[in-house]
Image 1 (tube, rainbow, N blue to C red):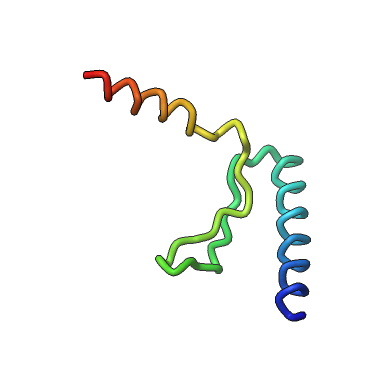
Image 2: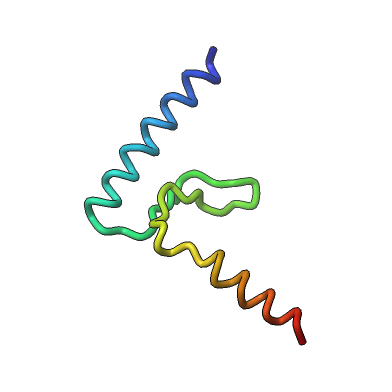
Length: 66
């Protein structure tokens, strides 16, 4: 039950942060107070336009042809 409540709270926070970031034209929002096991900040929002995955995969795969 506690897990469900926490998930609901986190989803609400995520939704509000995402809406705010979009309204303010932010590309990224980090939670500097929250840390992962590696002591790095969590990403709370990232604009889809900043996703470099496809571009980097093309570059990586092009390098395999050498």
